[in-house]
Image (cartoon, rainbow, N blue to C red; front, side, top):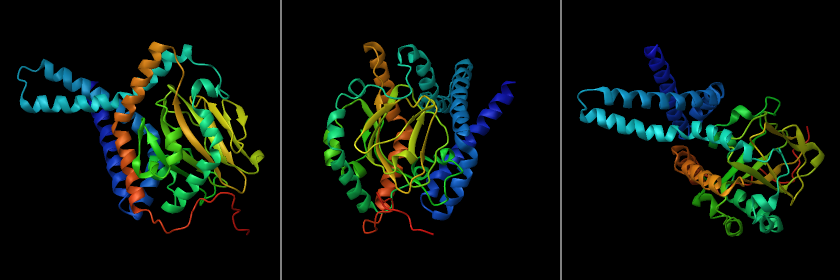
Length: 338
């Protein structure tokens, strides 16, 4: 039985390592990127979850085997220490799941409409400056040219609904992850940087749903945060909505909302205009002791290799962007009529 589990775990881990290497290679070649998107769409997140659990299993097995061995050689020590590092990285996903179950009794059971003042005390400055933030977003997007789609940065095409037109994209501009700013993009947002000084903000980006984009129902990655949306631009708002836990919300320019992304949620843009929001993940309000642990887990996420890879991809995209190109994700521009 153990031999079968070992073989299965090694196969899952090997496939994920190959998938990861392919993802980095795809950034160097547009042809490889096209192939990788198709491969990743088939593999989805299931392989990642199996791979990290397999890594945990193999790490524990190797440590136990080494301790039971009579001769503890240098290579055994090196292997065990390397695997322990992988174990620390891989533990984030099981840890975040277990932590979500633990804090559930202290979480407000409300899909949408959480208190802005309680979740993000500094939100007033963001809401009052939404037009300045809109101008910064437009200037940055014009500088970079075409903004990257979510699948370029996060390989997240699995949640784009099949009903979405082929050329419609969900584009993003990442500014912060794991509490650490990305200088390559954040330097274009001096006003936002001053307003976003709260340490409770662990993830920050601009999210643009182009006309026709529909997302499949999905859940967030960590129950220790709540999601903040400040709408930068939306038109025909009755055709653009967010659905969280069966409750529908229509964005309004300059209006902010906080929702619990641990509930199943989706978003639709059936208008003829782009919808742009400032997208923040903020630490969930919890009792003092639990809040301290929650901060630690969020900081741990910032040290995870995924965070470094994400910053690498953002920096690589920013370096190869063409500043002279026009904005590819314009606001309030109707698509050409057939």
